[in-house]
Amino acid sequence: MRYLVRDRMFAFHEEAWIETEHRERLFRVNRKFLRLRNTFALVDTRGEHVASIVKKAFTFHHTLLIKQDGRLAAKISKRAFTLFGDRFKVRLYDGRRLRIVGNLFDREFDIRHEGTTLAHISRRWFSLRDAYAVDVMAQQDAVLLVILAVCVDHTLQDLKGEKLTNL
Image 1: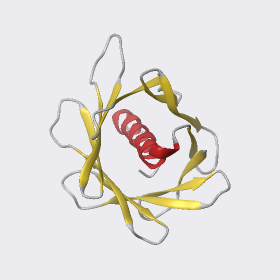
Image 2: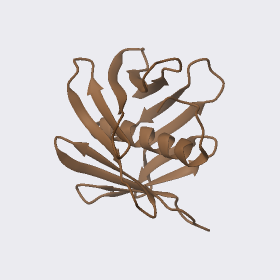
Image 3: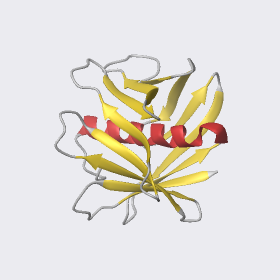
């Protein structure tokens, strides 16, 4: 299934919407202000909290924690410097380790587990409303895979100092 992440470019607060390919809104990603750490809340259309994305402070690697149902669901980290190998590594709460590979600078990448592609992320650069597509192949982890795509996109923008999106 394809999901679209659409940023609101002219909002007074920072938010993005996660929609289906048929433009049905599913989740809102909201940045919480006035916190020591960067925190994003993922809420559904009824306003119920689904997950949190928390940027760890004072780490050597750029690290984000994903919390669902009050527990740690995943940890995603980006290496500060690598000559070869993966830049992003994901450790899930159930022990699985995912790799994020592809052309990260053009925002075309895959989330993989043991050679199997779980999701493909593709960004369209030149649109009035900044958006990117997340094609999910593993529906049981669909929400988590979309959250990982948001984390990678935010991390890449944060490290480059870009302000392409509101997140």
